[in-house]
Amino acid sequence: MNLTIRQAADFLLERDNFLLVSHTGPDADTIGSASALVMGLRSIGKKAVAICDEDIPKKLQFLDMEDSFVKTEPVGIQTYLSIDAASASMLGAFTKKYTEERVFDLSIDHHMINNIPCDRLLLCADYSSCGEIIFELLRELGIKLYEPIAIALYAAISSDSGGFRFSSTRPVTMRYAAEIMETGIDFAKINRLLFETKSLSQMKIEKLAYNSIELYYEGKLAVVVLTPDTMRDISCDERDVDSINQIPRQIAGVEVSVVIRQKGDKVKVSLRSNDYFNVAEFASENFGGGGHYHAAGCSFDKDIDEVKSIVISSFEGKL
Image (cartoon, rainbow, N blue to C red; front, top):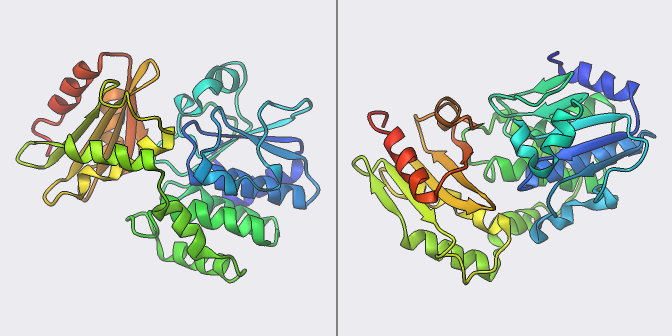
């Protein structure tokens, strides 16, 4: 059942004892959105916690306010929500537990396609972030944006809109951000933490990426492959690796960038585009992946060199 913002708010008012499940490879949108909604629900007398199958990255731990996140599911949960997850695979180690053994009561998402098993779906595919959806939900619930909620929401919206640079940024996105800023939060510090603060290992990975860029199809496709061998001497956080996804598409003339790397026993492929190419559609139709128009991904149970060959050849005649 597809819900409106108002219907979703009414559903939240009717229920209690919430568990919010964020996606694996947590970013500021899924963590900030979950934290903001947990704090908002608690402010109106509800019981709520959030959970993720991975630890929150160090640079995002400032978003886990008021102990919103827990390590294990508490006893007595009655209502299950997925936050910013488009498919079951995005739940990582929680995939079986929360999509096969049961279905979510409500999935809240802004990806183009959502395949999460759920009884109710709040999907706003034209929104810049899940944070925008949570902002509207909290407003419908009459919840005041006190400082911790405002920080979480601003980080969620700013991060997934690329600092309000991505094409998903709407005029209303800016108005929501302005309303959040008016609460008095230190938005400059939040942006610095999100976009300008890097670990040494992240810089080393970015150096590897710059040195391994390959161009195909008359320079319209840029590819970076990070093998276990090339990364052996770099101890890094998962989010440090994800930071390189934007690098190849910055080259003049490139329309699509691809970053291929080993993640556990799978090979992860991250796709980004600049203008006309719909990488979400490409990932979905060719590899069962998904995402947004300009940012998508998929994964393979194959050798990394084989994945590189498959992905590059799949772009033939399409750019």
